[in-house]
Structure formats: structure tokens, C-alpha cells
Length: 526
Image (cartoon, helix red, strand yellow):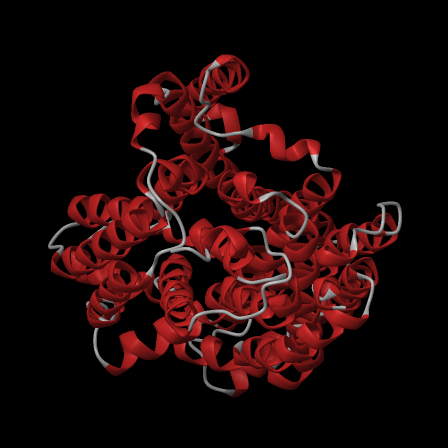
């Protein structure tokens, strides 16, 4: 334990004990499982719904309950790891996550599944920030070019390949294995964490100062915010009673939470990290990365399912390109982080994002694997360039004492970005779909000669095929075409707005100060 202080200072110490490297790799794998589990069920919700006899209104809660619980735990984990130590918190998180995974596989109705998924999300959420904090505590700046891409890859690859992995597992075996597959790796991670982690010591005196009001405020604020963002787009926002009630709970929770943050002796979340300008900007970019990461992971499958009629397996195969691009770009971004100004890397990443989404604004109903190939490569490669540089800018210049809290806040911004992004994307899709359908319908009226000709030709086609009611079939087909075109136009609108967002941020990056060399990833070794 004598080298802890030297290492924590991330100074000239370049030697790292092998046990710490193994402990860190075990932590990274635990984080991979926790993040993967957000998305792993997304492609298999239909199978889970059938298995649990759940209604279409109930089944989204399999994901929502996990997200709400996780978003509460992520910022709380900073305080808990200071109080309990990284070793104890990570071991409890890994073991609890594993037990909740096993319970989720035994669920016989939707209520049990929602409870088990909430436990899984809450306890598993403790693993994610611990890895980011450990990376910047154990490893000196000269090693960050290896470590940063690794955690960046896991944080972005896991949600991207989640639907692919989930699709394969539920097709090959059954939906129960989406959860059972965590059990053996989870036990190994928990054992490795308990045996090998020795980065810090617990400080149980913090328990007396634990801010219960702050925790209650934060849970009410973040949990309700996640609920409102998930349910709002589908229920016309505050017109729905439950969304309205949660919006009030969210507002009260926010007031209590921020009051306690600024007045409590040991606040549950320390917002002082935002006074570090690099951390503040890094968190802003992380928020937008969340929109890009979760928003596009949501949009592509929706397009392929709704317009192309793909099943979960086919969607997974089509989206595999993004994951592969990330995997191949990770070592490149690590090398570049040693050589390039991180601002240049972030700007390049956002320009790549914008180029990919701009290509998607030319979408048609016939787009398939090869048309989506380049946009997906741009998305995967840009994600890694951004993520590595953003991690280094945000966390690379903070003192070790601030890292644990800051890492929770940093991860929270990415998740909130995803939640806000999905809510906005859903709202725009619904509103623009209705708008485009109304506009297109005006051109397909009885008075329109082009529409009459199209309908006449389609009726003759159905008659030639021996249809019983050719005119009704033709009318139904024409209505389907209008619906499909309206949906396509609404997708194009969303991609256009995302292009504007990413392009404007690429320009904005150059406004921030160049961070000190250590934040760039490799300065400490020169």
C-alpha cells in the first residue's frame, strides 16, 4: 500500500503493479456488463413480452426501470466509494448486479421483472464511475494513451452492440439467457475486485455526515426526470396525469437536491468539479455524446424495423459495422491522444458525426446494409475519437481527491444526454410524422389527377392478380405508401437536426482553452 500516494498523485511513477492492472481489467469488464445490460434487452422486448404475458404499455418498463435506478446510483457512487472504498463498493456492486441478473431470469410476471431490473440498474450503476476514477488514479499520464481508449471503447461499444448481442442470444437460446449470461462473469469480477483492489481506504466517518435529504431530493429529481423524458413523448407530455405528477415531483426534488448540495456539510454530490473549466466543457461534450450514442443506437433499429421490416437478428447484423469501426479506431485514438491537441480530436469527431448524419438526410425506403455502411463507420470512428479526448479533457486535470465525485457526474451527463436525446428524437418523430402525413395527404385527394392515375393503375394491377376487392386493396396500399413517406421524412428531419447539433459543437470546441499536457493523455511522459 506504500505506493498508493505516489500513484494517486499520477506523477513520475511509471511502474504499475501487475495485480492493479488485473484488478483494473476486472473492473472494466464489470462496467462493460453494466452498460451492456441497458441495451441488451432492447432487441428482444417482444420475446420478453410474450414470455411474461405483458401488455405493450408495460414492457418498456423493463428498460425504463433499469435506467431510472442507474441514473440515481451513478452520482451517488462517488460519495459511497469515498465512504466504503472502491474495493467494497465495487465488490458489492458486482455481486448485487449478478444476483439481480439471476433473479431477472426467474421472473414469472412483468412486476417481478421491473423490480429485479431496477435492483440490477441501481446496484450495477456503482461499477461505472468507479472505473473512470480508478483509471485516472492508478495510471500515470504517460499510460493514459492505453487506458483512456479502453474505457472509452467499453463505454461506447457496450450500448452499440447491446441490441446485436441480445438479438443473437434470444434467437439462439431464450430471453432468460440475456440475464443468466451475466452470472459466471459476475461472480469472477466480484471475486477479483475483492481480492485485488487496493487503491484506497474507507472513511466510515462520512456515514455520520450522510445527507439523507440530499439523497431523497436527488432520487426524486433524477428518477422523475428520467420518467418524464421516457414517457412524455408518447403521452403528449403534461397532458398525461402521471407525467404531470412526476414533473411536479421532479421540480420539488430538484429544489431540495440543489439546496442540500450548497448547504450540507458533506453533500451527496459535490458540484465543485464544475468550477474546473475543462471538466465543465468535458461534461457538456459528454452530454452531446450521449445524444449521439443512445439516439443513433435507437434511430437505426427503428428505421430498419419500421420501414424495412427487419427482425432483431437482421437489425443486429446490420448495426454490427458501428461496433467494428469503434473497435478498430480505439488503438488509433489512443496513439493520436499522445500526439494531437485533444480539441482537434473532439472537433474531428464531431465533424465525422455530422458527416454521417448528413448522409442519412438522403434516406429512402430502399436503404439497406450498404447504404448505411459509410454513415455507421463515420459514427463508430467519430465516437472513439471524441470519447478518448473528452475523457482526458474532463478528468485528466482534476486532483485525485475530486476524481470519485467528478467521475460520477461525468458519467451522469452522458446518460442524461441519452435520455434527453431520446425524448427529443421521439417527440420530433411523432410531431413531424403527423405534419408530413397531413401535407402528403393533401396531395392524395380525390381532386388530384396524379393520385387518381396511381390509384387506377394499382387497382388494375390487383385485378390482374385476381384480387377480390381490388379497389380497397389499392386504396390501402396507397395509404401505406403515404404513411411510409411521412415516416421517412420525419427521420430525415431528425438526422438534419442532429447534423446541425454536431457541426455547431465542432466549431464550439475551438473556443475552449487548450488543456495542460497531462490532460492530453501523454504529456506526463515527456
